[in-house]
Amino acid sequence: MITVKDFLNKIKWDKNLNKDDFTIYYLDNISKKLVALSFNEIIKFEGNFILIERDDEETFIPMHRIREVKEKDKVVWKR
Image 1 (cartoon, one colour):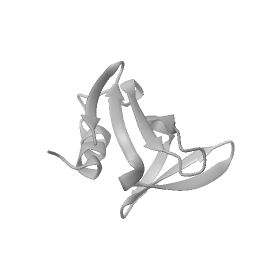
Image 2 (cartoon, one colour; image 1 turned 90 degrees about the vertical axis):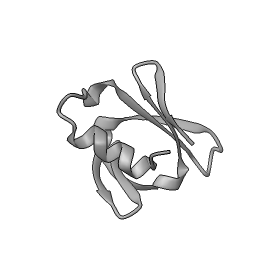
Image 3 (cartoon, helix red, strand yellow; image 1 turned 60 degrees about the vertical axis):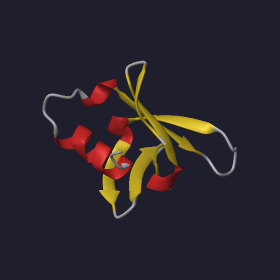
Image 4 (cartoon, helix red, strand yellow; image 1 turned 90 degrees about the horizontal axis):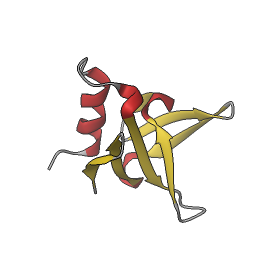
C-alpha cells in the first residue's frame, strides 16, 4: 500500500490529476471527528506534516491523522 505522503505527492506533481477533485479527511483530536479539507488548502508538505491555511490561520496537521482521500466521491486512499 502506498503511504499517504507518497499519495499526496503524486496528486501534487501529476499533471494528469485535477487537484480540485481531491478532498482529504483527517481526524481532529479535539472534536474527535473527521474533518474535510480541499487539496488546494495545503500550502506545503513539511516532513510528516501538511501545512494548511483556514480563516487566515496556518495549521500543521500530522500525516498520521489523515484517514482517507477522495477523488470527487470515490475513496482513492484509506488508512
